[in-house]
Amino acid sequence: MPALGGRDRAAVSYNFRLPMRILISNDDGYFAPGIVLLAEMLAPLGDITVVALRRDRSGSSNSLTLDRPLSVRRAENGFYFVNGTPTDCVHIAVTGLLPQLPDIVVSGINYGANVGDDTIYSGTVAAATEGFLLGIPSIAISLVAEGGVHLRTAGRVAAELVARFVKQPLTQPVLLNVNVPDIEYEQLTGMSVTRLGKRHKAEPVIKSTTPRGDTVYWIGAAGSAQDAGDGTDFHAIATNRVSITPLQMDLTRYAQLETVSAWLAKP
Image (tube, one colour):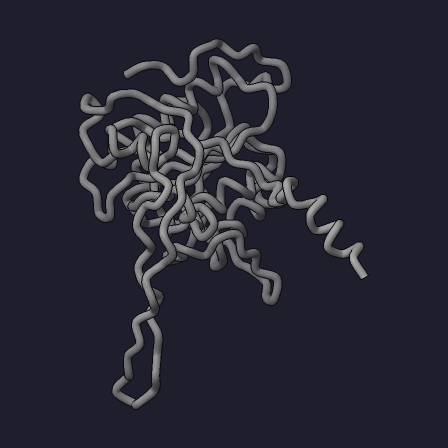
């Protein structure tokens, strides 16, 4: 599989200590097969600490628990688990739990794609985002299939990317959203640096009635791909390539600053 990127990047800001300190989290729970495999495959690359969720909180986005205290427990396998959100896990780990800052945060491995608009809602991406906001290079990694069978392919890709951080550190903190096709590793056709595509609007909610007569609503399915052309994460995955999208947290729509200013200036 071709190497990521076309040029070597000089290490300026980051000189990782060896062994590397790796913080692993997720949005599926500390017991999820994806995080267990991720910890196994990253262990040869450094000192692993897993701080994950007590239960599945998929779709929780970047929510931070502010209305109650949180507890941290340790499972028999050594993983820490938190009764909060993915963001809580990384925030607690980085700002209070760990004696030293991690060199990198890796979130996953998620079952199911986090592409296009999905990134807004994704707890997997949120855990990585919190690391990034705290100044730590972070990766969110997802396997593009619900209940996919090639979890080890995603684990191998994650290990290669983390190893690359050690060999060729980037010059600034980055937040990478990585999506891996659910195929054998040898079937991957390479890696593509992509932009987020876009979905059609979500399907309508599903309304139903409980045995007690209460009306309830199930959130409808995500919309199908709308912007999925060459260069998008959707397109990379469709061509059996690993999609790697650098994300940013500045939500400012700069192109509309003048438009809104002129609108407000009118009497």
